[in-house]
Image (tube, rainbow, N blue to C red; front, side, top):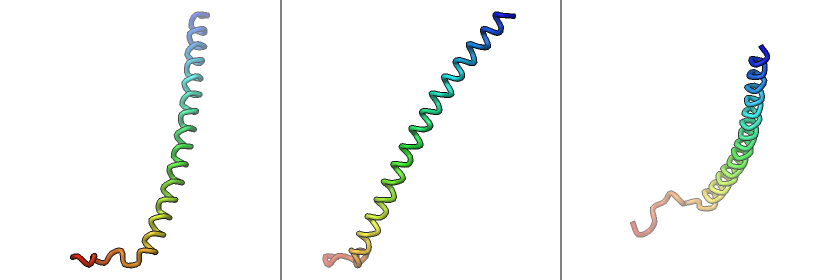
Length: 64
């Protein structure tokens, strides 16, 4: 009986460690995703600004 309890305690310890490791990785991924979202928003703003400045960006160039 004691051996079974010891085995279960060892399993729980490994599972708790795995959960903590996964939790840290999920947190890192969340932070990375937030950074990427901010970059995309900045790029969208830059492209929008360039499109407004360009005005005739969709016109054919004179050499066509």
